[in-house]
Image (cartoon, rainbow, N blue to C red; front, side):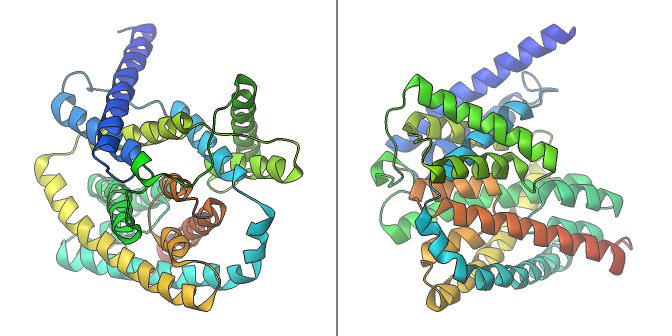
Length: 361
């Protein structure tokens, strides 16, 4: 099969996944599901994997550069929400950010016990599967330590998928309406955007991605465009209006890319990994909720913002949830970037200090 044929096949397959994801998101919105376009597209791409992974999706890889562009657009969206009022929370940040270190240690420790004692994973697999962040770093360090890469990959992706599935539903029950859907009337300011305004958004995304790659920003796919659009917004030079369809499209791209991660997983592996992941995510959300309650009482930051900040999902996915609720997405993104940096630091220290390479007891 020639390179051009492979490219055309990838484009066609990706287009089909996105169309199916859009339809799934629309149906999920009609059913008043929380985060309908992200969860709907995740569900439809997961079904596609179950039905076609040995045929149409054989050897298929989601185009990550395409996903990166939409992550950049999400970063731009978050940056537009940075206002002078955000800086009023700066005195609260040393406490909330420092407590993230305690959260990471508790989350990682509890997850290790769940995967090692209950799941029977060897020490290396249990430790890196239990990392509450740093997906790619956990895979690299875990493979180096001799972890079972199939199980490690499954647990890390299930962590993200379960968090973005469980948290919006729980928040919907707490708030009283579906999160991030038309039924909930998202409070994020959106409106019609001209072609010129859309061009500015796209250019800001590209410029932010370029600068982030040059200076090696942590989580640069989202932080680079975020910081650039925040600077433009605060300067008053640019007033970017973001249409709903752009936010929905970003959710579809992210949701579809997560769903195809199930490719290659057997039913037995999925059932085992899913059961352990439910325990792991439940533990982390409980710990994060306790921290959010305590910090909400000690600071001026609302519980909702802190709960999303301490939920152990991916930076991109949690930022989308924050955007849908206008839950200070810049604050949320900052906490998730710091959580990932702390988690990677813990993994690097563990690689040198703990006997993780000794499989079993």
